[in-house]
Image (cartoon, rainbow, N blue to C red; front, side, top):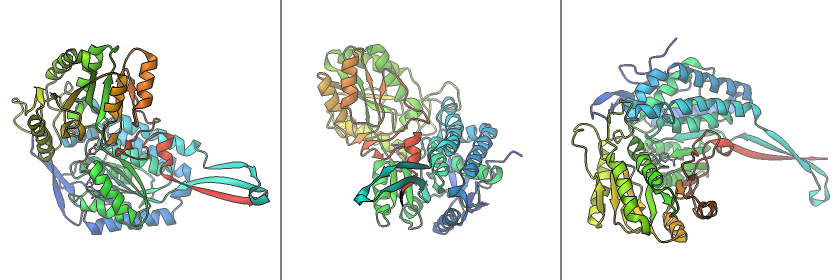
Amino acid sequence: MASDLRPGGGTPLLIDGKLVPGSGGVFATTSPTTGERLGWAADATATDLDAAVAAARTAFDETSWSTDPALRARGIRQLRDAMLDHLDQLREITIAEAGAPRTLTAGPQLDGPVRDLGWFADLTETYSWRTDLPIAEPLGMRTARQLRREAVGVVGAITPWNFPHQINLAKLGPALAAGNTVVLKPAPDTPWCAAALGILAAEHTDIPPGVVNVVTSSDHAIGARLAADPRVDLVSFTGSTDTGKAVMASAADTVKKVLLELGGKSAFVVLDDADLRAACAMAAFSVCVHAGQGCALSTRLLVPRARYDEAVAITARTMAGIRPGDPDDPGTVCGPLISARQRERVEGYLDQARRAGGQILVGGGRPADRPDGWFVEPTLIAGLPTTSVVAREEIFGPVLVILPYDGDADAIRVANDSPYGLSGAVWGTDPDRVEAVVAGIRTGTLSVNGGTWYSVDAPFGGYKQSGIGREMGVAGFEEYLETKLVAYPA
Ligand code: NAD
């Protein structure tokens, strides 16, 4: 039977297998497209969080979940199938709540990560949980050694609002496949996407009570509490670098493992032999997707000084042609920002750019034809030094900073002149020069001449202050495992 994922009175929490109201009542969810109230979500307090962590602890310690890969594979596939059966409802929720353009829900905003759950279920069945190492003679004793991989335990998953399903499932999929139990704490801006997951897990799967818990809350402190809880073994966090540092500090007291996917200010490097038109158009287009609310988007466009004016003209023309629109419209790529607060943040950066002498060549304000909701125009900024705040900090809006460089070595230097190292792009025709730039940039993912790195089997994550660890791929799955080495006399 189909589940109703948008109950009128507010979506529930999932604690110990039961769908329950929040002990803090409900909090309002808001449409980023209109600024109007959408509905309500359960507001978890510390009491609810404590119950969820206790349930996850008990499910890990006292059920066969961590030692039964067949049960896990079945449970994950049931969750995937339930999501597939409810894709229409999930799509409308995602567009309404996250302001995600409808076109993106056919890919990374929904359909992609839901289908990708199957990859983690398959991995549960094919992974080598035990590996024999060769006989060795440490200290003169012939010894047989076995390497075992085991679940870490209770995972606290804390997620942001920009790609709610992708990020929730990129944590839940591998964490569950590896045999962990999970408490998911989503962003206050997108509680429904997570609550829907909880409803479907409870109503359509054999996943035992306590293995998956979902606590939506209006209170960020619930995330901090989850990160600090001594019953939690690993915190998997995606969000801003500042919050990531706070999560690390909260987790330090109990020396729990942290997996951090943080911010970025990635460089799109156009070499002087590249197809300038194609490269700059791609850079201009991609920074507008989902109103620039993607951690891995390239938000600094590095172009050779000798071709600077040409590059500016192409980029400006492309960005001027992209109008922010209703995410419900299949033709929209640039929807609204998530909240009034986020729009103020972006506008604050635009003011800083002006004050620092930057030239706003396209956009720079709110679109006149979108008086409601939290829209910002695609904005191209030139004339800023690489040291300026706007050229260095993550803005999380449809804002591109164009910077000139002098020679390939300088391009690498400028690309690396950032506290971040999440993603980026290189365009050029000479393979040796492209390779030298690829090797020189310190970043977790790179696209060459438009190649796509995003895929469930490809690890994603950051160098430097963009994070610790990897998400997705076998490497991402193994983040959720401990290593036990057992030695026997041979
Ligand atoms: P945020 O850091 O404000 O919040 C993320 C989550 O952390 C939310 O669930 C929030 O409630 C919770 N939280 C807030 N304070 C906390 C604390 N002290 N301890 C524990 N949890 C706390 O991020 P956001 O504004 O929701 O999302 C935007 C940011 O996320 C951007 O910086 C973006 O780059 C980053 N992001 C990174 C990736 C990645 O994979 N690297 C992906 C998407 C978004």
